[in-house]
Figure 1 (cartoon, rainbow, N blue to C red):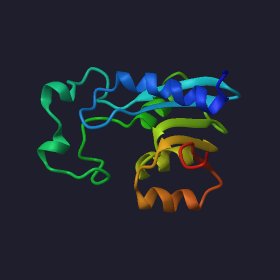
Figure 2 (cartoon, rainbow, N blue to C red; figure 1 turned 90 degrees about the horizontal axis):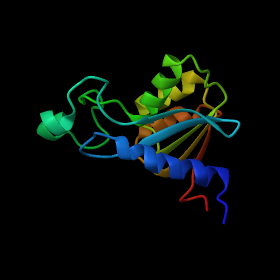
Figure 3 (cartoon, rainbow, N blue to C red; figure 1 turned 90 degrees about the vertical axis):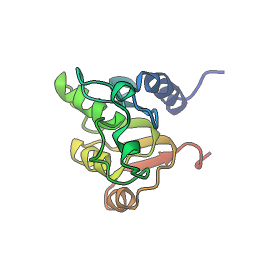
Length: 149
């Protein structure tokens, strides 16, 4: 059976996340417009920076719970890396769709809003009240494929 577009692109995010260097959670992201992939991203440290597999996880060392103190991490989120990749290559992502394994956090959500992304499709809900509040004030379409089936 041929998958619908959302299923197809989410399946690709599951391949992209395999490149993640994060020790806690692997996440992949795609930015898509008119059914064409514009950029991809996965969570991990910036280019040419020592991976957490060598340094250890700073968040684990500091006992930071998931969903808190995002700034205490050496890595970037998958959504951030996809947005940065598009900017690096001069690709407009205005009016695009972001596909990701996990609903974006508040930091990524703010970037998504300002980048002009119009739709977010995700598999797993990530509890972040601030992200939920920010999204409620926008016209961004949020689609959880696991709860909306």
